[in-house]
Image (tube, rainbow, N blue to C red; front, side, top):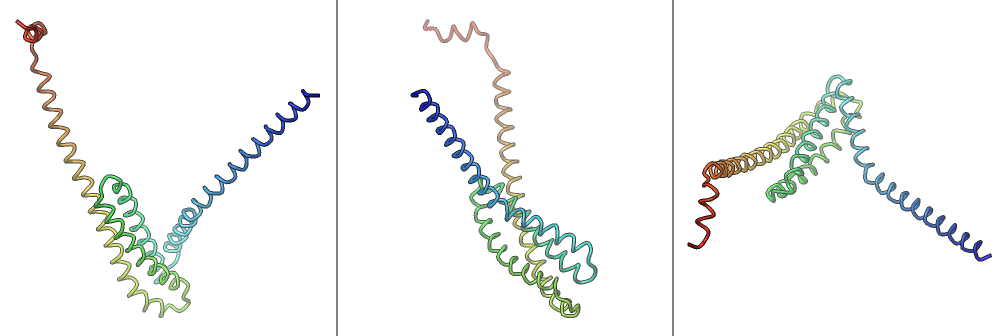
Length: 191
């Protein structure tokens, strides 16, 4: 009878562990989905915009192309700045500027999204001229931040490589000048 109670207790313990692990897996999976969903949604939207820019003609296609260009410039700049910001505090400041620029781009994207759905081509053309100028300014500013960050990262890498080269040359020179082992030990021993 006691053996049966022990077996039932072990069975309950194993079942509880399985349920706990399953619940933990569900929670972690849910968190991962919630975290990845905006990125997936953004990727799908980017593909849709790119497809519309290639398949639509006229000003409607230009609107989609501008949306794709602005999004691409901002994403590329964010990747470069995030990659270097861990090592360079200046790039953290640039990230803040990029965040402000992304705010302006978001407003522009909303306007362009409305223009993509506008049925009257004349109205789209009239509004697109102003939006295009703003979009080109945003692309230029984002690209300027990206190019400056890349130049900064390359400069620091080049300087580090130059210092490393000097250290290697100094070590190579030191390795080439050696004294025989007996002479070196004799100089160390008190005379």
